[in-house]
Structures are given as structure tokens and as C-alpha cells.
Length: 313
Image 1 (cartoon, one colour):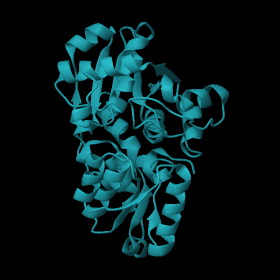
Image 2 (cartoon, rainbow, N blue to C red):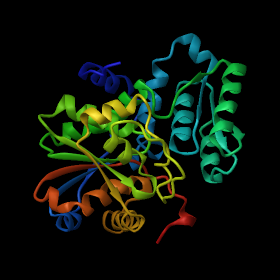
Image 3 (cartoon, rainbow, N blue to C red):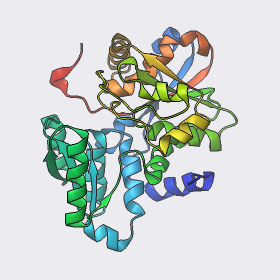
Image 4 (cartoon, rainbow, N blue to C red):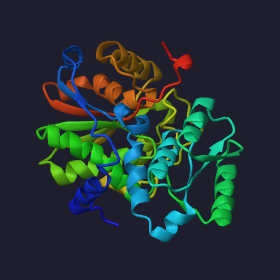
């Protein structure tokens, strides 16, 4: 499927009454540190606390009436689990979420709080997929992939569309990259709605499958990721990667201490809550700041769902 400019415009129109149009914030101090003018699109203020509300809502709204009667299902231990539960609740349909037994209790509580039904499985890929397949066969629910789904990618792209509407003269936009839904959507938004804004991603060195894939030109699966950025542990998908390969300028890797330093900077100087995965984008920009000197750069803060008793500082 080729995602067109019209697809993205229709997506934003479809979901806008179910999401927040999140603010764009700035910081003079961080601008001085970076040597560039930064515009932070704050998806940490999105409903359920992350950009994933956009993709989940768009995917659910395009289901048929019959499909909605059987509900939706996904596998996730993080923000998409919460997003799907809330998006389903707003449409009065059932949401089933397969979560590993070792998922943080705070995330399980959030899914339940939004009305989702959790089915626990052993914490490995085989158990996750077999549990999901059994669930779908038993309930008839529609499986919605957390990122490797065209309607989800379109929804995630609306965050960058709004940023571009507010600031149409950006030289570049940075996002984090895990499975690639946000990065692919952002790249498509920049491609369709700007005159050459370049898109970059930040990725932890300890989970750098996207960087490896980008360098080699084919998907290199994630193996034994080790990073504080727990939302970036997944591999790219066969729908996200071709878009990234075609429309993303570069993927920049960062160390753990650089992620934590960027997180602390956002908390201390901007007075907002950002999760480690979402601060990887700023960390990447600061690491390579000489390349972006005197430019106007958008940075998508992807989410703010943090376990407060496990802060790294």
C-alpha cells in the first residue's frame, strides 16, 4: 500500500475529535546547548500519555460494524496496550491485550483502568504469538499490530502533520525509533507536507536493529536488546521499513548515559515528564549538534509514561 497525502489528511480528519492536539514547546536554554532552534511536539500530553493513541484510534475507526462487535486484540507490554484499550473504550468495543507476565504492574493497571482485558503469557515471542492466535480464534477479535499496520502508521503520522502546520519551515524532524510506526508516519508527513524537511531517528546503541537494518538495506531482527528505553525494544516491520528506507535521512545511535542526560534535561529545564524512549531523539540531536547548527529542528517527545519509583536520576 502507498500512503498518500490524501490518506494522511483523511486520517487526521477522522481521529481529531478523539485525540488531543498536543502543544509545541520550546526552551531557550536547550536551544543554546544545541546551537539550533528546537520545537518539541509534546505527545507526552496525548491521551493515555503517548502518540500511540493516534494510530490505535485510526485503526479502530476503520473497522466494519461487524468487526467492532467482536472487538480488537493486540500484544504489547507498553504504550500501545494502553492506547488500544482507551481507543476501544471510546468506541464502546472490547479490547483484549496479550501481555507478558513480567510486564510492570503499573502498565497492567493502566490497561485495566481503560477497560481492556489482559491475557497474560510467558515473556517470550513464541508464547505471545501463540496466546494471541488462540485468543483471536476463540473470540473473533481483529488483531491490530502495534506498529506494522498501515492504518496505525497513518495515525502516527498526524503528530508530525500538526507540528508542520504550526512550524512549516523546519529543516529537520527527529523521532525515536523502535518498531518504526512513528518514524515511518513522520517521514511520510514530511514527504507530503514540506518542501524538503529531512527526517532523522535516534536509537539506543543497545537496541540498534533499525540502524543496522538502515545500513544494510534489509531488516535485521532485534536480538537481546539492553537499554533503559523500554519502548524501543522491538524490530522493524515489513510495512514500516520500506517507508523508512525511502524517506528517512539517517538513524543516529546514542549511549545510555546520553539518553538519561537528555531525559534529565527535559525534566529539569522544560518541567515536563518524558519517558526514556522519548528522550532518545533529543539525545541524538545533541550528540550530532554540529551537523544541525543554526537549523530549525522539530523533536517529537513520543510519550511520558514513566514508573516514578524507577527514575534513572
